[in-house]
Length: 327
Image (cartoon, rainbow, N blue to C red; front, side, top):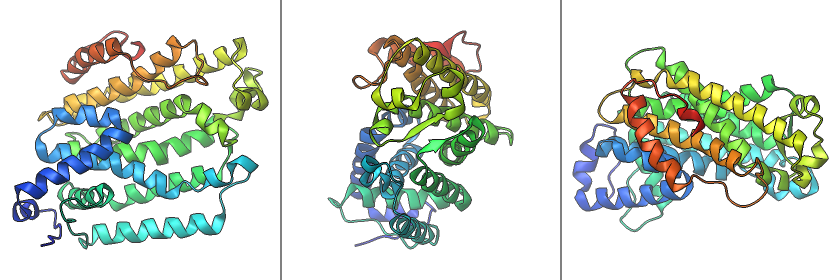
């Protein structure tokens, strides 16, 4: 029996506990693999919100995969084929239309994890009244990234960060629930900070595709060449450049964290604080590596994660946590 999702909550009851548990395992597994920080933070949430947040984290990854056609041409230094990219964008938008129309049904137990994510996200869209425009802005941000190999200025990159990172954070904030209208802009700033952090972490991967996401005006300012970045050169100029970019990301985190107290108190506030601390901790990991992002995988240490739990708890309570964004 297939059950279509209407967002009321009766869908899961009709589907049965076994289907619910399978859905949670499938969605959680995909989120854990591709959005580990969101997965960890989600465990502070009640069951229904946990599934929705994990579905959002996995869904964003799936959208990235669906719209990333540049990897097939980056070796030659070219941009993504326009026809193929636009076809994929159209496919994604058609799927979003179906999800918002309530036309998605729960897959059978044992089906693809991706289908479970789509089903769970479809239910969350209606239940938490997530504006469709946020998903469309997210898709546009991803489309833009696939067509650009360079960003000339911080202003141009900032616009991308707002569309890609800000939209994803807005979607999650709708699930968590906010108590003040000002919280929306803080969520956007948080998403921008997280996306900038991901850019800094993934510079090696992007360089392998001949893609440079740092503003070229910053490279010029610190006299560090595109050729050096593509070769993974770590020198004093690179260190100064990375210190500047990390400082910019931390300023975004500090500003955005002011809105955590405006998130619901059912565990959502602690979940948001945990995402904040975990993602910002990546910056400290980069520093510990001597700013060499071209070596092995960059991830948080066990000590960082342990301190993060304490810092997140304090942030969630509205306390002042000195230097949390640098640990």
